[in-house]
Image (cartoon, rainbow, N blue to C red; front, side):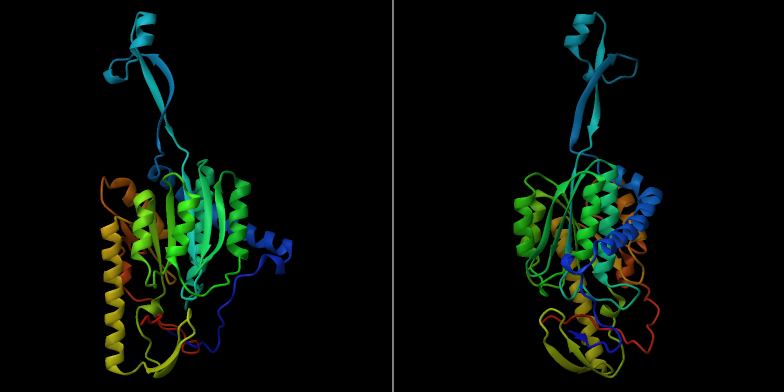
Length: 346
């Protein structure tokens, strides 16, 4: 449940038919400029070192030199030429990156400079441009309690800009969350093993079975979206909470010690359950907070995963292992605009 906000109304994505093309281009350009700067300065090398490609492709043969691997000798060519030659290979770089964003009611919430899904949109733009720079295919899926939009994976800058445009303009019709519907569509869209970035707050009941199914075939990286107000119940006295996905309303006393203890216990239990699930499925996790942004969390993830030989990686705004998920709280919000509380699932 989330308290009704008096001074801020949750904005809706703009439908493609209701926005002028010039405005769309300006929005796309702003996102491209902001994300391309990050790609050029910080993420390009990290992305390439992380995603190594699907295998090695034969390139040519050259004459053997001392120190070359004996197993690389091409015996047929060596026999014809009368001296040893070795095979040379190049990395087969082409990958498919799928960006999957949860646009349900609980993801379209925030108490800092931007909402949770807005950070996910910009992070998706960074990954799309990084993939394009490395000649990888990149696709997009937006979902709520249904699949709102799906863009098959393709290459090229033009396609990346189309993807960013769709991120900015697709208006979700649903408010709930269905991972099952999203995974069903993904399994049809991705016939071969792909890298799937799944951005959500994971505040849903139908998570484990769809994620397990997806992780069996693809490399799944969970991007967990969090807001500080979801982690600590604000002491604002009596409050009316509205579930952003179902519209259910309840009234509670946020100053009551028992209520605050119950809320803290629920947050800790949700965190523990999510981490246990991701660990069991072998999923990497990037924790993105609206108070800190995604840059440091994404960089920490890239570097940690490139170094580790085995096992899942969890990163957050304070680096490896996502310590910020339980760490230093963000600055208190302005009294004029009390933050909304974490959605309560019954």
